[in-house]
Length: 280
Image 1 (cartoon, rainbow, N blue to C red):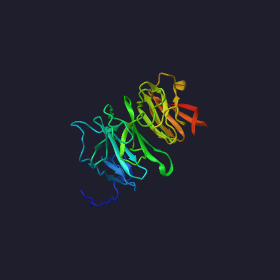
Image 2 (tube, rainbow, N blue to C red):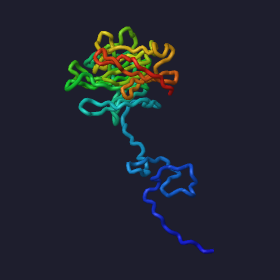
Image 3 (cartoon, rainbow, N blue to C red):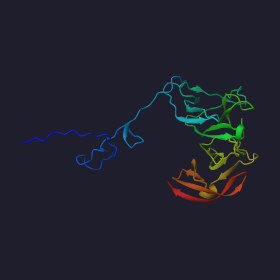
Image 4 (tube, rainbow, N blue to C red):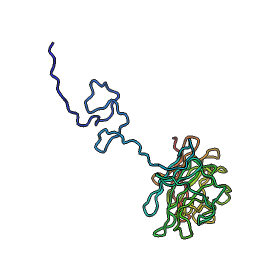
């Protein structure tokens, strides 16, 4: 029996046509891959190997068997970035060295709030306070059962190191709310939007314009949206988002609502007249 001559074939970019698990591997062109484990697609459409994880933290005060459960990239007005993270009942700043942050009662960051607690799965959002050259970067951290926290520069001139304070010790809580402990937070339309507080899980509380720590009714521009008048009182808000000019409200009954703005009031906040229901 005659034996065919072996020929070498060069495959310059194996798998560049992508992964094909439907057709038989016998008949596949050489450009297809039948197995692609731990791969990425580069900008030229080729399969490439992942670089894997890079260990950043070399110093932390996490307890044994405790883990980081939430991470947020905070951007300052000067362009610098700080990684905020929570776990083990603490909030940390930094990556290589994780510095545990203290909650203070005063604006200068000299009197610790000994009764303050920090959640492990806190959700973050950031917004500029003020406009122009006087603007400062703020971040809010929320979790149900934990009074909302604001991460801001200390001092009345906002020129000190960053500290944590509870909303109410700095800024103002929504009028009539004793414990302001929202479970979700969103930065959109020049405001901070929160929802899911223990005492009222169907109401959205939003801050004043370009003032992310002010929620009281006495502050111009802040307010509430009681969506129970639209969806009923037995559906709790579990998440907030924004898309294409809509405020998106996700509810516990496996659907969400899109609220569309129409008529201006309160320095640019728009009353929600148009809404639609989506099944998610």
